[in-house]
Length: 258
Ligand SMILES: *Cc1c(COP(=O)(O)O)cnc(C)c1O
Image 1 (cartoon, protein in one colour):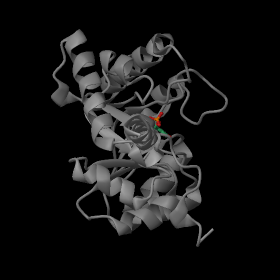
Image 2: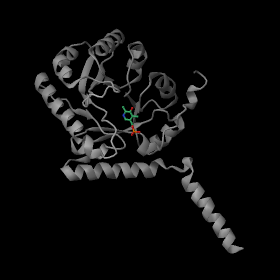
Image 3: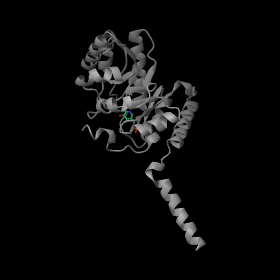
């Protein structure tokens, strides 16, 4: 009888561990912070120079609040429709970056919602963001998203194009270019994308020469490859899955409006 009871308790315990809601953001955050620290230590960087962004796309506001409770304040969203509904439900003091492809017709909503648009991926989009920002009298910090590996499935500037058009973007009213962003190709072994991160860092140096001023932000590295990205100089890592667990496919709060 006692044995049976014990077995049952074990089962309940295992079930609790494996239950998706049992995924602890706190434990995940500790792991990510130690990955950041180790990567910095390997290359002699100060971890203070690496900002962790929590990618909250597809996560309901309650999950975001859990992360807020652990001290996280910077969040990334990839769809304007989702951000428009989610951001107003959360405390004002949080900071939001747009990290997904932005369509021109969504700029009007995106400019007031976000502290930074990381996914400015063409001159035409930069011009549209500038036009809207100017209309609203808002300075708009941006990053230029570069498609380093030239993947046809991804958005982003071709690296040579960035150099050709950098000064033109820089002259647009209200835009402040803070740096560059990239999404590395998917790889089971992150060492295989190290060169992508290195090339983004080198491209930033060339942009800094053109500009004659520093560009402080290198946004690169996600759940699978943030360690290598930090070793190559990332100042901002964008982490979703390793923090929140697998992303829900359906965004509940959007159901009523879909
Ligand atoms: C979804 C997303 C991330 C986070 O990816 P994970 O692998 O879940 O950490 C980072 N950056 C961008 C641009 C994304 O769209």
